[in-house]
Length: 117
Length: 117
DNA sequence: ACAGATGACTCGGAATACGATATAACGATA
DNA sequence: TATCGTTATATCGTATTCCGAGTCATCTGT
Image 1 (tube, rainbow over the protein chains, first blue to last red):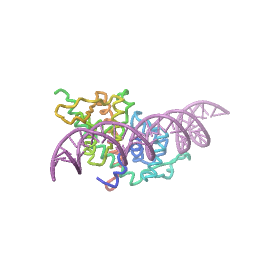
Image 2: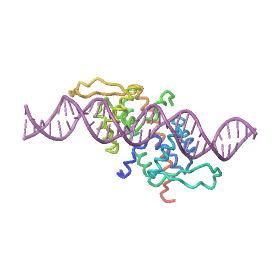
Image 3: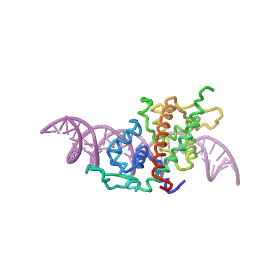
Image 4: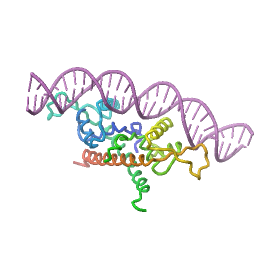
């Protein structure tokens, strides 16, 4: 893979969900919380503490930066965040890592759970 | 899904890799470290601190328990760990969660990366 | 006007990560 | 048998991260 990305990996569940949410389009904090809950069907809920800790760290590492408010938005409170190019590459790398994990698990769990014999 | 499993989710990267390793067959601590490094092609390295912290917590939660030494093993130092039934179900649930994440990411990252226009 | 949802953010205790370190048994070899 | 590198378990202490409770302000509908 790409060795320069490995210091960022593996992403914690919180960081992964945040980056994934921002991969679609820039979003504001509260929206990220809702979107993460929606994507996981309520199974994983991100509180404000975890969210802003992670956002700050992601910005320090330059995986995320702040975006200008879209013209379509009239709520002045919102602050928008977006993926940087580096952030996108890190996300892709971690997704590839997870694909390998899922594939590995697929064979192991199938072998251990034969439908009949 | 299964609501009784959600308190265990999401698994941290370390816990996920440990459970995945044990899904194949019971294994001892040092072997888990090597296997995790091998499975991730050296990208993710699990140190002893993280390993034993996690093993202890996984045993407290009864996702893992200690297994008797296999007869084929003559090294008396080794302590073997294995998945409990609950551990296997939690692992399966988390893998299903990750499948959803990977699928979601697939469409998002493809949409954001059109080959031409 | 009021209530409830939306929105950004801080705080501090609890939990977790993780390298450095300790200890010792094993295997091979000189 | 002395020695060396590897295998193996485990702890310790600091750093980092998690994460709910709480604060404050704004928006939206009635």
